[in-house]
Length: 213
Image (cartoon, rainbow, N blue to C red; front, side, top):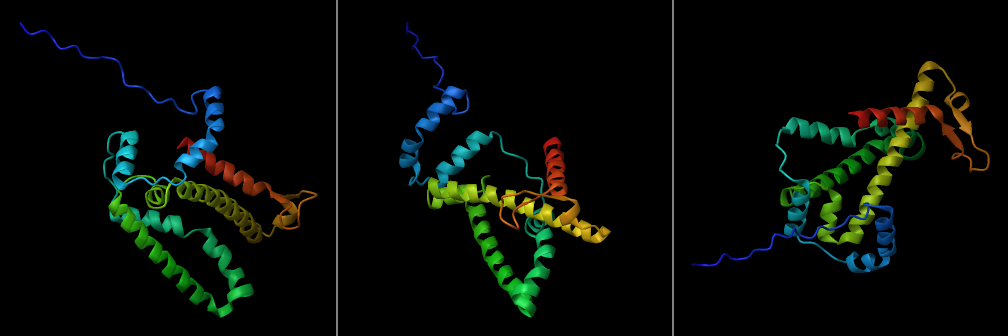
């Protein structure tokens, strides 16, 4: 009679997260320089990137967006209030009648960027965007710098659009926005020493709506 083969039922080792506790976070901060040296120049392959991201994401999401939806997302992400805010000042101060040529050059650059994103998206159909693409191409340090710049871009662009909104609203209803809705902070350089309360309220309101949604 054959004896049963003994098998190990011990669970697989679980990797602890750096955010599990305050002590784990402190240990992770203490190892930052070693992790940076080890991972700054490391480049992952396309297969590793796709397998790791899909393993963390779980089941595949159902594809429900059509091409008009994607076109709408692209236009909404690129064409914003900045087009209407910057055009008049750029035409008056800098470009003049050549503002049309400036938009043509900017459109060509955006088209080339769209081609690059399309090529990457076809080759690596995963979430992550520019961060994942740069991690495969140039390594994790370049991807981290790009991700940090993107976050700062989103923060600064939202603040600029909200500030421009209050200026346009004040002009529309005949109110001096700089005198009525802004608080001057003493000690800061001129041009950077005013807090726009209405712009802050707009950003907080939109953030709350997004979080609730």
